[in-house]
Every structure is written in C-alpha cells, then in structure tokens.
Image (cartoon, rainbow, N blue to C red):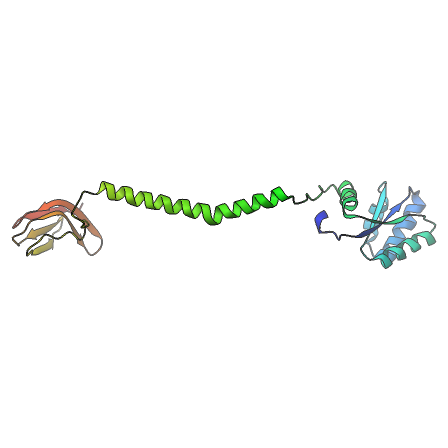
Length: 207
C-alpha cells in the first residue's frame, strides 16, 4: 500500500453524493467501465459515506470519469486538491496517519547523529586506546628503555632449551645472568620467570 507521502503533489478527486441502492450500482458500474476497478473494489468504494473517488493527477481522465457519472444521472463535483487537503482526506478514509513534514530540527538532529558516528566516536575510541597504552606502560617496570621480550644482558650469553614430558628446561651456559626472562616453544608455549643466573637452570612446568 502506498503511503500518503508518496502521492503526487496535484490530485483530482470526485465526491459522490449520498446514493440509494440503484445509484450505488450505477456509480460502481461506471467506475468499473471507466476507471478499470474490480467490481468488489468499486462496490466497496461507493458504499462509503462520504464517497471520495481519487482520480489521480491526470485531468483528462478525471473529467472523463466525471462526464460518465453525469451520463448515469449522478451529479458529483470534481475538484483539484492541494497536497495538505489530500493527505488529510486520505488519512481519514484509509486510517493512515498523515506523513509528518521534515522540519529543520529533524534535519539538524540527523546531521548531528551522523557527525557523532563519523567523527566523535572514532576520536573517543582513539583516546581510550591511547590511555590504555599509556597505562600499561606505567605498570611495566623500568628496564632502561628495553621491552621484556627484547631484553638482553650485556656480554656473551648462551642458552640451551630442552623439552621434557612435564617441563621445559632452560639452561644458561654463559657467564652473564638474565633478568626478567621468558621462554617459548613452537609459538604455543610461553612462560615468564624473574631471573636466569649465569650457569643456572630454570624448569618451567608445562601445566
């Protein structure tokens, strides 16, 4: 069903007077023959009081229907209605609410919503991510400008990593101790431990 807002800006209509049974029959017959309505649709239309017959924007077709009704003995005025009158009449007849006009405040509200979605929200997300990153940096102990995963002691270091059935063994065969260490295997296993002294061994459980 077309909404009231989809109708053309200029519209012709014929208002049928109160009709008796024969008058309703003749009016419905004329609507079927001239306007091309189905019989049940035409009978339903002429049974309403008052009867408003929308004729569309074509003035020639509207006047042709008007002349046919007059030939059948039905005197009905024809008129051209403005959009507001048409919307109000069709709303009463069909039960459809009138289409609201878009006001300046509605357009402004939509613009503000789009601006919020396109600019404000991404900016807030960026600020939140930046704050979280700064917070994490504050929680990490000072390592002299080095990260935990890239921290390497000065001097020579040699490590041996072996995997047993229940643990990974990390052996430092060098002469330099390593602080804030981590060990990984095949990108699946990852463990951190505080220190690996020179010549020392650490076992990390696989549990």
